[in-house]
Image (tube, rainbow, N blue to C red; front, side, top):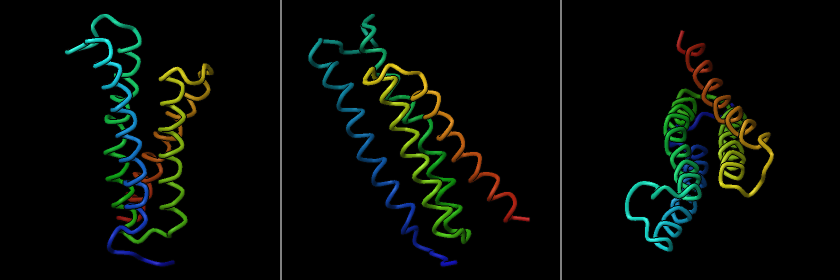
Length: 132
């Protein structure tokens, strides 16, 4: 088990998720600009879809990244940290693909949320178990 104190592994996933956030935000912003929607969703279903795809990302990623960082700082193995980070990235990607309309199967959305919440749950439980 290799213990890191500078969040080397979490930083990789934070960077990937940061790039994803830029893409997701740009996609919503470009649609907003193209259709002259200056505030809210303009009663446009596609704008709502893009807003929620980006918004759900911003609602769930910060807590997950904080927990993964704490797990890394607490000395979890690289495998654990990579597993949590990969689950989060795949989960957020999958959820976004369905919510944004790129895939129609709700399996992507549900699976994406399960992976996202699973990474939060696993990190939370790991921290609790290793704190006592």
